[in-house]
Length: 183
Image (cartoon, rainbow, N blue to C red):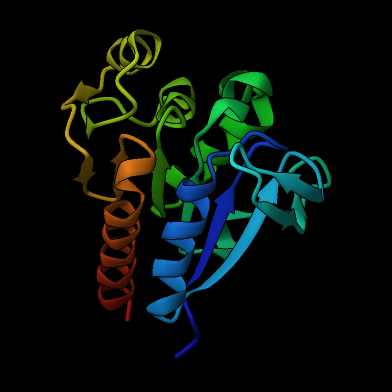
C-alpha cells in the first residue's frame, strides 16, 4: 500500500513552528508522506525561528487535492500578515479539498481560512479563541466549541501550539480511518 500523502500549507514566513513540526512528526511516525506548500516556493522561517522549505507553490499551480489524502493549514501570525484568509487561490484550495471528500484540517487562527472558504457550515470547530477568529467561524455557520481539538467528520481543527501534538494524532486517526474506508 502506498503511503498516505498529507499536504501542509504554510504562510511564507510567520507560521507557528509547533503547529507544523509536531503534527508532521506525528504523521510521519505513522508512515505518512508529508509535503509542504505555500503561496510560493522557498525556504521560510517560523515565528520561533524554525526553517522549512515549501517545495510546492500554489502560484505555480503545483498543488492538487487529487495528490493528497488530507491538507493541514498551519496557523501563526503569517496567516494574518499574508492575508491567507482572503487569498482567492488559498480559499479555492480549501474548497477543492473539501469538495473532493478529502480530510481538511486547520490549527490556531488557520480555521479562518476554512470559514472564508465556506467549508465549516454546520460543523463543530475550534480555533485560537480570539474574537476575530470566533466571529469568522460563527458567521460562516460553524459551531465553535472552544475545545483543544475537534473532529467533525473529515474536518479536524485545533486551538493552537499547545494542542499541536493531539492535533497531529487526530489528523492521523482521520487519515487512517479514511484510507481504511477507501480500500
